[in-house]
Image 1: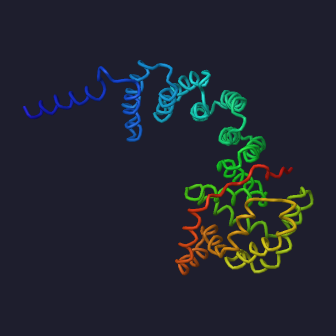
Image 2 (image 1 turned 90 degrees about the vertical axis):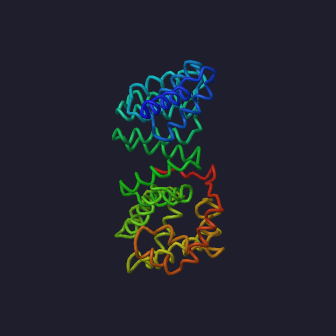
Length: 335
């Protein structure tokens, strides 16, 4: 009897959640999003379909249906809904992102590329679309085409972090440590607290070690653009600081000397927000703590952080209160 009571009660609850006769599409959509947050994609999809029966052209409900289908690994369903959305005049950037995820999941690069080209015609200033288009091309073994898109994204939407992330990792992989360093440090200042931040921090430290190994900088400068030459020559002048290798002390000293040498003459000729940030940190007394935070992927850097806990905490508080935003118009093209 007690078991029957609970079954009836559960049935009444289920009916109350899913079958309210006077529910509107918005209420159902809100219910579906609760299920989505809980990871209950089956029930989320069930409720989203009920909402679409009331409001079949609602863009937000359709986007959530496509995304839930993707999360359920129903990629065909996600593509079907995604194509319906992107063919609509209401389609926004997120609509194309969701469809792109589904195409990439099944490695349908041909249709995915066609879709991204269409999306960028509609949203030519969207940095995230350039980022995801480039990621798709890189997955298709077309890294040389991908980097062009990531750098275009950096040029037109310099505060979008993902283009810096992909560009830094790509350049590190092909041995262009100069641009991997610049893009990587921009990235970690825009996106400071994610798993990707940790990954790029390690790449940055490795880049510095490799940049000051052998004659890398001499070779790099042979075909350098004016901006690359200006920065690269300053790096090269500091070679002696690394005679005993890249250590925490030598790296902080090298980077501080670079900023002192860069201003004011070269900063006027080649303004660059990242160097402005470093100069501000140097002037305000946070530069050392910043560098140990930046390169804390190795234990010898973490030792300083532990020993100088108060300085580290003070810098992190400062960082949280200062929004780093690269400036449009400071992109330097290169070969």
